[in-house]
Length: 367
Image (cartoon, rainbow, N blue to C red):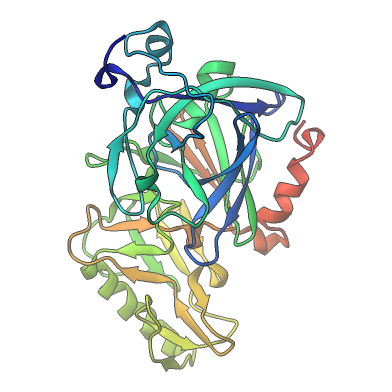
C-alpha cells in the first residue's frame, strides 16, 4: 500500500437530486458571524453537518466522522475518474489557513425530493481548519469555478444545466440548479481575475450615489461576488471618495450624522428614505441598484450605518461585493454562457428570498 503522501483527500457525498430542476439547498444566515450555511446528513448512523457556503470556494471540504473511512490511493481508478487532484489543497476562507487532508470515503445524505441520490468526491479535512467558521460548522461547501466545486461535480455526474442560482436572506434563502428562477433578470459578463481565478467577478465601470457619478477617474474593474465577506469592502481611496459623496447626498436629504459604530465608518439617525447607490456595469443601461435595505444596517432602533467598509490599501482588487448587499436578490451564474443574471431587490415586489424558497421547495412550482 502506498504511503499517505500518495493518497488524495477524498470523501464520497450522497446528495439527493430532483431531475426536473437539480438540487435545492436551504441556506441560513448566522447572526453573529454573518456566514451563510447549509446542512447535509453524513455517515451511518447519520450525523448532521453544517457547511459554510463559499461562492468562490474551489472545493468541498469537511471533517469526517471516524467511522467508515476508507483510504484510496492516488492514481486509483476512483481518483483518476473524479480528478480529485483539484481538491488536494483546501483553505479556510475566513482565516486564510490552508492544508491537505487524507483520502477517505464517506456517505452524505440530504433531504429527498424525488428520492434519487448520487455520489461526488470532496476533501476530508482536519479539525484545526474549522477555526473562524460559525459554531458547529464541519467545513465549507464551495461553488467556485473549479472542477472540484459542488456544482461542477453535480453537473458532470448528472448532466445538469451548467448554471445555478443563489438567493441569500437574513433568515432562510436557497441555492438551486436547473431552470431560470426568474425571467426578469439583467445580465452582465463574468470576467476573470488574475489573483483568484475560481471566483465570480463582474466588471464595474463606475458608481453613482443618488444619480451622481463618483469622481473616481477610472474603472473599478473586476468586483468579486462574495458570500464570505459580510459587507461590501472597498480599497481605501475608493471608500473615501464614496463615503464623502454619500454624506454630501445624505445632508441634502436632511439626514443627521452620528458617531460611527464599528465596523462601519459612517452612521446616521434612522430614517426610511436614503440615497440609492448604483453600480454601472458594461454599459450605462446595465446597472445594479442598491437601495435602503441593502445600503443601511440598522445597529439600533435609532441608528443606521452605511453598510460598506474600508478594506485598506492592500486589497487585491478595488472592491468586493459582500453578502449583505446580495440579500433578497436573485443571482444566476451560467457557466455555459459565462454570464451572471441579477434581479432588482425582491422586497420591491413584496417578496423575498425566504418566500421564494418556500415556493420552489415544491418541484411542481418550477415546471
